[in-house]
Length: 310
Image (tube, rainbow, N blue to C red; front, side, top):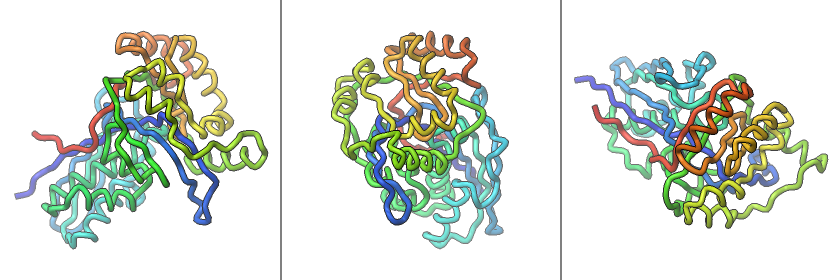
């Protein structure tokens, strides 16, 4: 009997993102600290007998997401995840994949990577592959640098391309305000601008070391200390490509954020609040500024990819 399996995977914010010089293969080594947030991508997987993959997309109720540009073919990470899993485990069945998007598209919050992670978990269960979490993590590394963390969730240090993960000790809950833009930023374009700025000496290259201030603030559960320690080497390049993000960072400061940062390669701005109530007040302030197309609140750390029981 055919059954539909559902899995959800979280958004992420980078608390630290240090970028090294590009290697011969063009990839930049990273040191990053991820935190998973309770904004979710959901993937529903329903096996089909004809060996085909079909993909459809909806937006979660109330989510500030424009899914019109999401590809519905083999370029979609969820589709690629299903194909890779099928090849690896010798699966001849196809699958209907239905994505319910709750994470901004091209917002630097790993929504596409979350789709891939959720597709791996949902399809592995729907096809009854018996895949272990370790086997799924190996496949996740082949799909993209952020996909392993989407599986892992919580808070973690990422090394290499960001896919070599170590859990990070945290205490308590952190509350975020996320200001999103309808227009995305291309990750390759942001990295190219980073390389240009380094070559032009407009920006110094960071040491590839874990930021001890970030780790200490996480262990203490101290949002004020964490806010002052947030760093992102890609923030300058993102601001150069989308200057209005600077005004949004200023607006977050005016709302007394503990700290604000461009999330990953942008253009989402993540502002850290002192409490859940402060996050709600700060969100209202940022909405009133009209500098963002949408503003949402989220908390972390959230779990990694999990199956959703009916």
